[in-house]
Amino acid sequence: MTVILFLSCTEDVKFNNPAFQGLKDNNFWRAQNYNAYTTTNGDFIIESTLGFEKITFKMPYPTQKTYMLGVDDITTATYSNALPSQSQEFMTGENSGSGQIVVTEFNAETKTISGTFKFKAVNVDKENVEKPEINFTEGVFYKIPVAITSNY
Image (cartoon, rainbow, N blue to C red; front, side, top):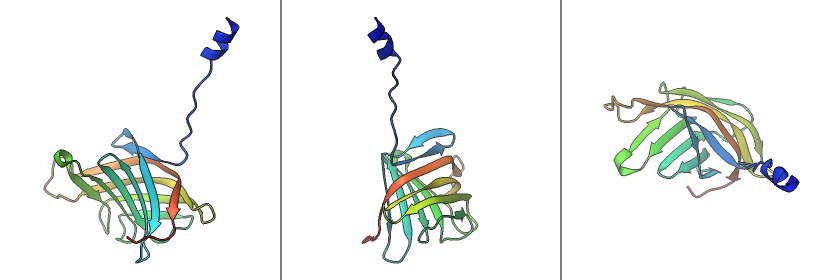
């Protein structure tokens, strides 16, 4: 009986290492796949996907700092859904959308990047009055693997 008591008190703890998650319009969203890489033109990209949904961050080569969104086209956040019945794309850019990407750690030795994010992105389809924007809050990316060079 004592063994049963101890077995019933155990908890299954699952660590998300690495992870990319946040609240999409106040609903929990966690990526199944994620990666980061530099492009041949010098942009640094962090991508995460959940089925047909994709979040892409573009920024200069990262350092530990806060990157503001909605200020320019150098640092941007994009959310897209490629499911044909729900196809949509939302972006931040110069004077469009808002938010921030905070890089808390960029480890060149272990080739990982970690940080937080929140953003409001504007629908690329300006005529879509049903869904003019999308909001991500309480976002975290943790130890996302980084490929230092890419053919993209």
